[in-house]
Image 1 (cartoon, rainbow, N blue to C red):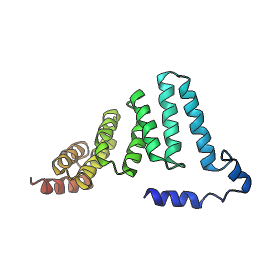
Image 2 (tube, one colour):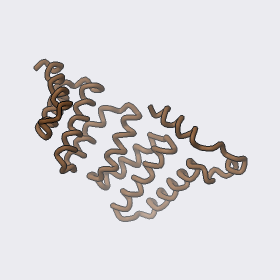
Image 3 (tube, rainbow, N blue to C red):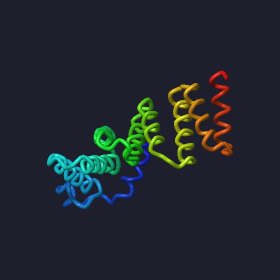
Image 4 (tube, rainbow, N blue to C red):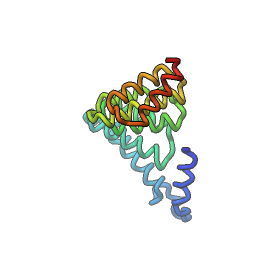
Length: 176
């Protein structure tokens, strides 16, 4: 999927002129993004207060994720942001996206749990438990964990037919 997103992004960027090729910090999206990442990293070296540092790491990570497609570097910045601001939901979601793109599925359940802890809306929490259940079932083959996640989702939104179906399937797959 990341390759498809990259292809769409690259197709939407006009080819660089010879002047742009000589000046990588030109007006191209990637050039501007690289310049902004460097600016964030320069400010981080100055040692801003923790919230500002977390925000700078987050901004650098977003730029590294898209349009630079450097998921490994994005993970490093998202992790640094998360250490400084553990309940910053955009950081948690960004880290989930890049970990998914990298196929690091086992690192995702704790990120979903962290977002569940910060989310007050029962419907949104139910959807997060549903996402966790799907991840556990489909990618980690943890059917008991999936069943528990779906049960928590159903408890929060007992009239959601999709949750009820997923919960029942998880029960069958977990042998219950």
